[in-house]
Length: 455
Image (cartoon, rainbow, N blue to C red; front, side, top):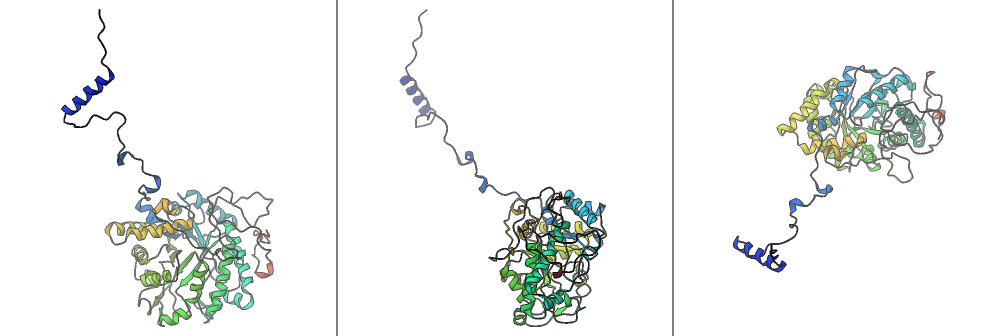
């Protein structure tokens, strides 16, 4: 049988052109792969929309809460950490022994779903979380009278080492208030001085020492609590002087601390006629604006909202939302039993449009950065906190490390295998200067090491 002749390539192309024209296409059919469209082009990772953590998680991140009477594993501890709070505050009710505190911090960090702040309220003198462990201590006022600023910085550094040894990474100290009144007043001898420049010099020295020891300091109580004798634990104190007077006195230590790179500032529960009459600074948008106007870009933290100056007027849930709306980044409450109510109220406020979600994201980002996690991964918002290490020639806080097994315990010999739990702590400066026991009262009790680290 004769074979049928194959059409030539040229004939085939001509036939395809005729068919395309007959089907309504005036142009010859294009051979080869189709042209890529915008929808086919992969989107670079940097330009993809960010997906933040769930709203409830971001709301919980802004909370720093206490654990009343908790000294070990407990239902309250489990509930608070399951909420995803940003941090836990240890008070003297959480303290029995060194080993017990370390075990409690280990339990906190092991159960937390992310890095958390572990804070304490360890001032010089009478307000101290770990008095039973560290022994007695001189007041801030007495330190300023008897020591140089350099010596006070060494004391702060030794305190930082001790706190890091327990697993604490944030200290609600120093007091930067200006007060020369009675020693036993609400501020009193917790203040370094009644002179604004001396109060500034010594509070900043103590803060630098804490930072050099590995702990984040918290400058308090903005914009100054020293003028009033009213106790904000029970009432709302009032300050009546002009803003010009505040700027030349009470605000001086805070201005210098912000200029030096203070990472956290606490706002007090005092009302100022010149700022926002009748409204505690911790709840006042004008007070937060005044702090930001100083150039502060760190974490703005409230004093405990369970104190009478706030709690007699607003319940915990209402106060948490009000503080965030005013400009707070962290909301402190010593009663962790209120954490769920506060978290839920924040979520409801955002959903109802009473709290701007962008404001919550800003706050959550800063608190996340304070804990050592990635703020953009949580809130799709960058946050870089200032630190006291920016001053050339001065030792200060370095960036946080990732959580690591067996955190270094600075009170142990270097030849001893560290037994402290995993911690999220700041790296301590290498080879710190030798610390003399004569600079600070040595901790009491047979279970505490007899000397701090020397390098």
